[in-house]
Length: 137
Image (tube, rainbow, N blue to C red; front, top):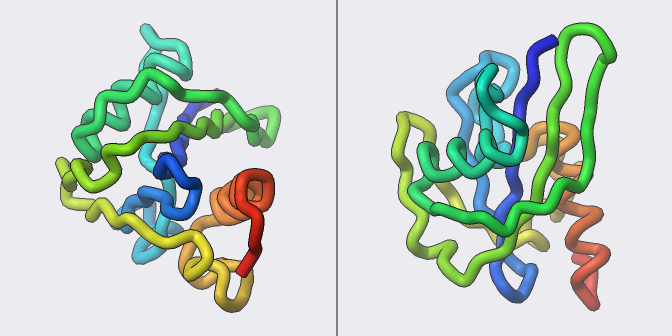
């Protein structure tokens, strides 16, 4: 089974989220997803999350919280983490995939964000926003 991590980084007020404009895999091309990638054989998911975040956007964060695991029970499992930082503005693209900071309310203006954000990342962002925000869209 291949193991992946995806991290959603929020600002201190839970109003903005850092996402990556994906070039690959092909089914994600042009859409937004959290930072992340494949867990190496020598890593646990938390370690991979720290490494992938620094590799993709230059932020070295250690306050990752595991929020969910998605799996098909045979070929893949994806560990979803969240983190908060006051340094979203310091993130920069370290690969050919662009780092973008989005206002959460704007992501869900229509179509539940499905046209912009990869599923199930869109659901997790919305759930996080509902939990920590006083107002929804």
